[in-house]
Length: 114
Length: 116
Image (tube, rainbow over the protein chains, first blue to last red):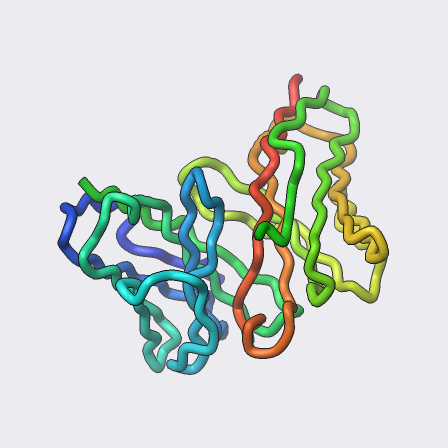
């Protein structure tokens, strides 16, 4: 069974640009969550999608957005990039996203903003 | 407000000995806890979990203990192996209602080094 796949693995963008990251969950998993990992803040929850609907959202500005498609694949978008957006972005999938389920992570996308 | 805390930034143990990683939480609504292992520039790998209705869960060399009254959990690795060297994250979920969907709250991590 294939794991969670994130593309691309690495990205370099310029301040002010926008970026789209992609996540393909484990087959059969309908919940996809996104996290940002930085040295200072650790792993921070961005948002969660289930059946193409955003069910939960963390404390990030509106420049961070996402969507989920009917095949459960998800994308996240960051507009007007800032230097502080440089981070490892991780996607996690689970069967239902409920509170008592394990989440499985992809390899992450390393975003560098210059 | 850090709701999940791993107070030891690092831990060093000898191969074959026990590694004990600790985690404290403050939110009494958390009812499910997980441990992940992470290598640099990779995603976390799920290790083991425990529900708040249990106080212990074992999987091979890994055992997680939960003390609800103290809001404390620990991960025991026995025996420790050099390949266990990584960053270990404690995570919690279940903070109530819609705010719990798909959300894990992570500790800051503990770097485990196992020496041959």
